[in-house]
Image 1 (tube, rainbow, N blue to C red):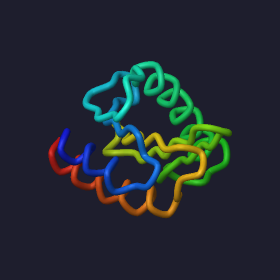
Image 2: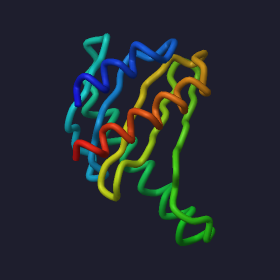
Image 3: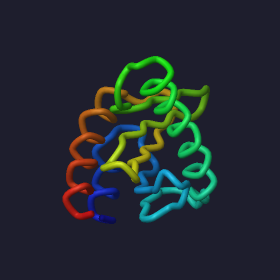
Length: 116
């Protein structure tokens, strides 16, 4: 799994971290080019992802959430679900290419799903 996560960070311009996490907020595996603790980032985004998924599926009747992208001034995060209990988190800087994040993120999510 670590090999797939580190390759994802290399493939996406501006990416600095990738993680496999549970929807319970626990960090399973990660790769980062910084010394930032990803545990807090994963825990916060797991809650956001659960809330967005519930809103789309139950409240808005929009179906299962396929991906989520959040962008701030200095940080952007792309989330992709893996099976029912996991998700891929890709942390990129605020000016990164969302298309690259989506393309390589989906591919990496499929590879990680095959190993779970």
